[in-house]
Image 1 (cartoon, rainbow over the protein chains, first blue to last red):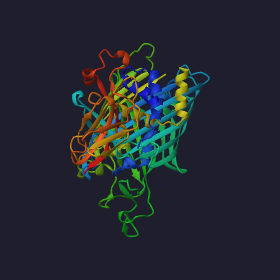
Image 2: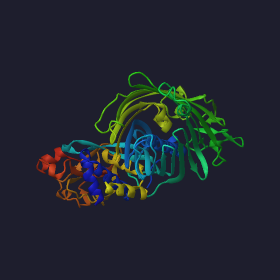
Image 3: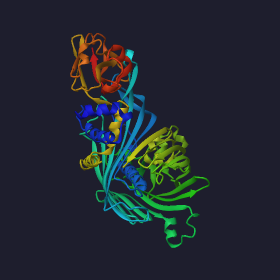
Image 4: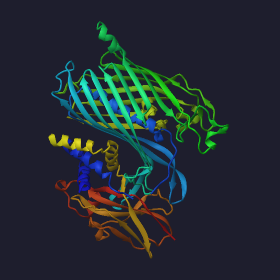
Length: 450
Length: 152
């Protein structure tokens, strides 16, 4: 019954109102639990299989969402985005020929967030006031490759359908948040990483993940000045981050230059990202164990390397609604790392990432919602370094570093909004998934807020 | 408003991950294969079976497809039959189809089954629900994963 109801909504999604959209989301969440009908091939990749990296991505998206939400008064917030990267040429099994063949697949990434907030008492009237909120959130990110299927319907024309291909990853955060605005924010949640291998026929059985992990996530922020976040796996921190809003801290003591100073934030982050796993792009500490190459031994004690990142981020308003945002991140890996195929030591440069984004934010007035409404267009340039880039790029001899760019636009009309962007090798995208190097990436998002 | 909040709260409490929800929506938009079918040979025919109920106000018919080329899983699928060639495919409860003489050519083939819906909801259809309209105003609402058969 629910499936029929859902079908009807999909056929009419262009005319969907908010209430129907929410009901659709709820019904859709159960449809994926219905049984489908053993196992396909797996392809080797780095970041996709690395649950440390994926947990970092989903927790960053969660924090990113709250960066905008924490200032707003709302009961319900729903955000969805779809990101598509085309032309992934992957060796894929053809059950007709019995051979692996190169096939162009699409990488589809979908993200969803649902947050329910309840004020204890009343919402504050303005930013200067204080209030207490409790919020429940669920945010999730799905990554996976799909293949197009072409259907010739005769007189009715040709349509395209799609099949899941290779491993599919579903990462979710279930969190509770307490906000004593503007003084203190605390988020605590569970991160659930699930990996599925699709059936040979292109469908998935959601009730049987091939691998499943649960981690904890904690984040706190004090007076919008200091923040700390960490992802914990088996009582051990996988990643942690500290951030200080330097300008805001300075303005606490002297407000003379409030309008003139750029907004500066500094941060330190560390991630246990290199763990000698099959999917890691490098060996940690040494490519050898007891004098034998690690890749020639079935089991050996894994070595771990920690990536330390120091960043400075600057936001500077320019003339006539233009704003410039820049960031530079320095890295230090606490042990040597080595290429897996050549076993050569990799000399990591000091600069891991930098980017510059120029945005244009014209003032708009929407009746009754002018406070939080805006339209922003932006263009940016970046450089990103990562040991996995050389593995995934079209021409590996070009090395580990890559320049990229981004162009996009987003609109926020207080209760509804969305955005579109196109990226090519842009650093924030490569940080989420290095496999997207040398490929176009397109993303659209839509949100509702009550 | 209260009902919406209750439903949203239920979603969170019941641990339904947003990754699945967002993927399901994307899967519907891109017509992701969503159910399994079985095929087997019976003499010179091929029998296709499925276990899905396609009943809805928008249901227009069931279509059966097979790969155009033998021995190629990724070949284009071509229409084998629709409701205008086989009356039973106009019934949403139909759960099997016999591809007569489907086993007359040797090779490995792949079959799929699709539920076809009218593009517009019942109260907005300003065209008759006949064969010419079917070819203009319908679309694939659901499609199965592939099912392989080797004809020797």
